[in-house]
Amino acid sequence: MVLLSGGIDSTTCLAIARARGFDTYALTFNYQQRHRIEVEAAHRVARSLGASDHMILDLPLGQIGGSALTSDLEVPKNATLAEIRTRIPTTYVPARNTIFLSFALAWAEVLETGNIFVGVNALDYSGYPDCRPEYIKAFLKMANLATKKTILGKMRFKIHTPLIKLTKAQIIQNGINLGVDYSLTHSCYDPDQAGAACGCCDSCLLRRKGFSEAAVPDPTVYRKSEVKRAASKK
Amino acid sequence: MVLLSGGIDSTTCLAIARARGFDTYALTFNYQQRHRIEVEAAHRVARSLGASDHMILDLPLGQIGGSALTSDLEVPKNATLAEIRTRIPTTYVPARNTIFLSFALAWAEVLETGNIFVGVNALDYSGYPDCRPEYIKAFLKMANLATKKTILGKMRFKIHTPLIKLTKAQIIQNGINLGVDYSLTHSCYDPDQAGAACGCCDSCLLRRKGFSEAAVPDPTVYRKSEVKRAASKK
Image (cartoon, rainbow over all chains, first blue to last red):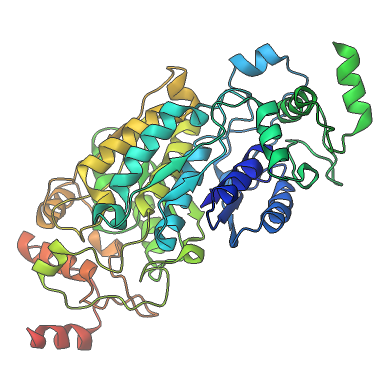
């Protein structure tokens, strides 16, 4: 079971699970996110990396709201790295990873696998509380008390977080070594209709920094005007 | 925040939250359950008990399957009380309460309330692992690490489980004392098109036992033939 958004982290996580010899079942959510174009990226990635199955679930997170990703709130642009590292931005989606991991538990129990891979990263990330090691540990403890098969001793969950202590550049280097084609992935929170990335939301900024530090050409199509404006502001 | 299925337990739980002076926000899931008629019951109950808001969310649990409630598997009928108390039946839905509570967390964070009421009951229940006190405790610990507002110290979650140690009869007595109209509620896992209850699934059996032991007339419409057949089998 691999949670797959179609971004750099979850794509690399899927490649790592494959490299470790797992049959992989990718799970993606169409949660009424502003950048739902990422679901198409997830589809391309799952096929390219040979996932045995790919399930896409529709979730009504727009009904709950509370986030710039699921409502009309503006997506923050051109933040500094210090800002990205210290604040929890409006793109935080209430309880998102808890919701996603809960569905992962459900499907994993049906598939009878205890191995759940999730590409959370607590270094080059947007300060989301549900990406931190202590959160993952608490979720795991709950998970093993939550399901029929764990209670009956037929399986135990393990949550694999191979990226949690890596920089974005290290993640990309890992992926390149495993043959990942990052041109298939999507990161931008605020893409245009054609899917071109803004280049200056937190997710684009971390992506660009990652490729730059890894000295790997960034295959992303950015909307040039906005990126230039962002650069000239600094 | 009150999780409301429209059955006896969650209805009583909502009445208790109201009696404790809370403004109540009821949350119900249309999860492709066989007995989705319970969602209508939840709507009636929320209105009758004066919930300030009632959100109904569609969840694709049928896509995940693994349960008699979300697939074509047969619903067990005419179990003995000993069976009900010792086995986890095929009506178990993988990770259901974890999924439901995750959405409760999300909405509670948006509403800025830490108080979540859930009508789980570990006595007259169907052996579901995600109804037990140790599970609820582990979920709560995870929840307080999961969200922006708890991490920033702006709120803390508390999961209220006022029914967890009560028998079904005690739950009904409590509800009657609070003026609950149980004719609005629905319990049966396998109702007919008109909503009449089978009378012999686990949920009906626990409901009937509850009304009988509480010495309260059971307002439920049962399909007479099936109940008779069940009774004559014993």
